[in-house]
Length: 267
Image (tube, rainbow, N blue to C red):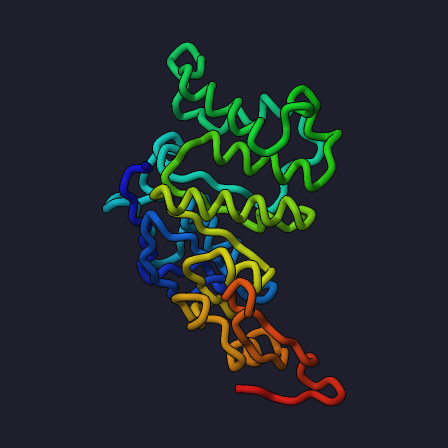
């Protein structure tokens, strides 16, 4: 099991991109961050990871300021996956994944045996064994995405902040990644991921945060956050929601975008 962790945003603002965001998330949650383009989702994750300094408010991990700590300490707490890995990186897959647990290296620069084992397990888990000695520049976008996720897994931090972890993946790998993230959360990790596929977010996430124009529009269970009124006001689509008769998961039936011919509202 992972060590207990609490990540808190206290009236967090980043210029005009993120405005007065507050929330408290704990180990055991798989939190999906949803919202339209430009809503502030990536900025929220970067601020929570301590990669951008808030213009007001603060981020606290287990009672300690995230931005006031060193990069090495933050890496022990939080793993962050950016939207995309550099396509022209000269590192091989193995070398890049080995960078995940950098905070655990000895003074001589060596990885402890337990960290090395996690690296090899992450490479195997995400189907990268045959690609281990291939440079990142030769990989497809989906393969690079899996390498980035493997690096976060190898880091073994209590908190994982993942920006669009399934955006470049085929359906099989999307479901596989989401199942593994849900499993990590069940083991005590706090997992937060920016997701654009609302139905998959509703199926796998325990909680959702809906951002709109830099502010939190709704926060809570998928059933409370994904509602026809929010889909209309935030995403500008007409829709109704229902429970899948086979899985019990929340589903969305879309009509047209607002202003389209033959739109019919639902609330």
